Structures are given as C-alpha cells and as structure tokens.
Length: 267
Length: 230
Image 1 (cartoon, each protein chain N blue to C red):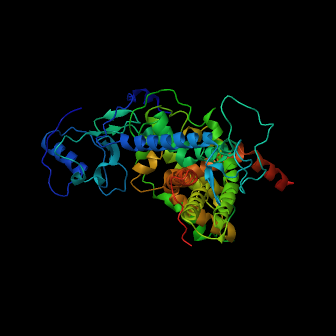
Image 2: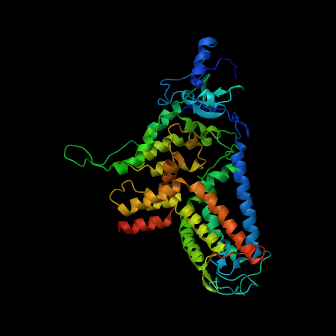
Image 3: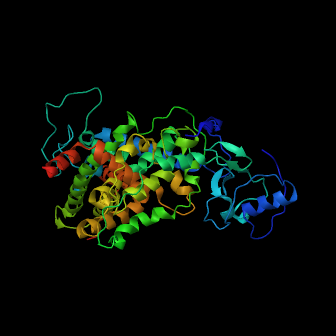
C-alpha cells in the first residue's frame, strides 16, 4: 500500500474551491426534513382532529385505539383508548403506536441516509467540501451499522401500504353511500405516492431479484426486478413527494375536522 | 497556487487552456493527458473545486471573467502541479479476487448466457478508470481511509465481477471486512462526478451492501438459507 498517503492534505470545515452554491441543496434538505419532523411531531401529540367522516389521517393509520377522550369512530380497530395504558409525562396518542414504522423505514432508507448525513451531520456538507470532523466510522460500526435493518422496516411499510389503500377505499364510503370528496382524492394520491416510494426501495429491488446473478430463467422475479428498478430510478422524487403529501393529507383532514376547510364532494 | 493568464477562444476545453499555458508561459507545467476525448481517464483534475476531466470541460460552461482554479485530485498524494500519485488504485485492484467462471457449458470450452443477464454488469464496464469517483469520495478525500476502504471505483469493479452470470467467486466477506463497504454513507458524490454516467451508488454499491446484509445482518435470510440447505 502506498506509504505517501500522509501527503494528502485535509481541508477544514466548509473549505472548498467550489464556486457554485454548494450549500443550498443541503440547506433545502435540512429545512424540508426539519419542517416535516416539527409538523409530524406536533400532529402526533395532538391526539385529536385526525378523522373527518370517512377520512383518516395517514399519520394515525392504522388507528389501533381511538385517542383518549375522543368519540369512537369507525376507523378504530380495537375501540376506545385502553385504561391500562400508562400515564407518562408526555401524552401518548395513537400516532405514537404506529409512526415508528414509517419513521424507521424513512430513517434507514438509502436515499434519506445520504441526504441527512450531508444536511444534518455535514458528513460531508456537500461533495468536495471539507468536513468538521476527522473521526469517521461510517456505517461500519455501531450505531450506524443498525441501518442494515432497513429491509425489516420495508416489510412493515408494505403492510402499511395495504392499510392506507384500504383507508383510501374507505374514504369513498360517506354516510349517504358511495361518493368522492376532495379528501378521497387527497388520500388516494397519498397511497399512490407512498406506494411509488415504498415499491422503489433499494432493499426491495435486491430482494425481488437483485440478489440473483441470473434472472433470465426466473421470469416473475425478472419482471418484478424491472418494475422495482423503474420506480427506483425516481426514488428521491417519490421520497420527497410522498413525505410532503403525508403531511398535507394530515393537514387536510385536520383542517376539515376543525371546520376551517370545507370538504367539497365531487359526486 | 500559481496564476497564469491565457486567451480563451471558441470551443476550448480546460485541457486546451492548460496546453496553451504550457506553450506560452510554463513549459514545465506538469499535466497528465492522452486521448482528449473523455475515454482514457488521464486528465482528471479539480476544476473550480469540482472533480472533472479537463478534456471534457468546455470553457464556455465556466465563468471565465473570474479566475478558474485547476488543482490535482486531492484524494491522492501530489507529485507535481496537476499530477497526483494514483498508484494506490492499482494496488487495490490486485487485492480483489479475479473473475472465476463456472466450467464451460459446451464441449468446445465456451459458455452460454443470456444478454439480459449480462446487461446489468455491462454498465460497470464503461468505467474509464479516471478515479474522479475515488477523488470525490469523502471517505478517502477527507478521512484518508485508504487502508480500510477500496473506494467507489473498486466497488464498481467488484460489482461487475460479483454480479456476472458466469462468475462463481464469493467476495462478500472481503467487501464487508477488508474492503470496508460499510464506510460508504451513500452521499452519491461518486455518481455525480462519473463522466461515463455510471449509476455507481444505486446500481453497484447499494446492491453490494444488500448482499453483505444477506450474509451478515439478516437473521431471517440466514434461517431460510439453513432450511433450504436441509
């Protein structure tokens, strides 16, 4: 191995010869993720205004139990909030019982990893820009070695897509029968975008066929691999669109429930 | 850093400007180049801080009203002016297990494989070994992990071998331990600078990381494999 590697000079934090606006992309990612984290945390703590008629906010779906003090809706799987649930200094809502799954899926997602390592940890701040730390463990050691759990979050995320698809269908069942409101479209777009993001996952691409060197004799796996690969090419786009739309879907249901928005029926 | 002035004319690339400077004012200015067509991978440098091929960077894409900086690749030890010592890369390549095909399919010593199976690794064979991906990789550039990490170029090379339909060699354990694939934190800088537009991260590194997960971090997969063997 070359012994003259000591001659490589490291640059200081933010030091670069780049003359373009290298910082804007990391800043945009930082602001985008921060905005979503702040909003979703706030929405999760509310424990109210997460349903409106046949609509259920995706941040509360699946609704295992109705939130404490909320009237029983048709969306709840197991009925009212159980009395045996411990009282903690911070209120627990139904959202906290389920948000770990999509949160974990996104946190360990290959696209998001690269994006937040740059935006939140400056590792690196941008390509060919100096870093703040000389110590580096990458994903080779604890704690980031745990990112390898991604495929297990994928399995749960796929189940969530089924549940959200059911929610979108249920959003057509109004008190007076079948109908389509703006909320139905919002929730349908939500599951389409989330599905496009989830089914374009790098781990899924590997599991359906990427792990095989010969796919020509496995037509089903080859077809699936081609299909996932097509979605995978736009994984970043769907990651952002679905993130925004989940937040917007919750916001829409919340605003309707609070009486601020009127949910127009298309038919 | 040394300042040079030269006249820019229509259609010039950065390498033309360097050659013009050599002719006009600095005959000893060291610069490595060969084909001038973006295929030999010799003239890699950092132009205004971005790793690029000098022969493929047109000056009309750069603001020449301000000084243009040209530096050697920073992930390797400097030799002189625009030349760095890239010999470390050749040493790394020698450490990767060579292609080991299965026994021939036909009596004449030839093999049969489907085009669709080889299409996937064909992309990796476009690599011109310019080492721009190695240069921009922060694991090498900023953390100098040359002893523990082989870099994007050789992860692509490993992927080309590992995913080849005829290859029977297993490189997964080396990728995890000796070649440090876990150091890659998927910033995709290597993909962004590749002059051959190889989708390094998505098509080579992440699939290899997933193969490492199969072998070392997925208990369910191990269990399935155990039952299949029985």
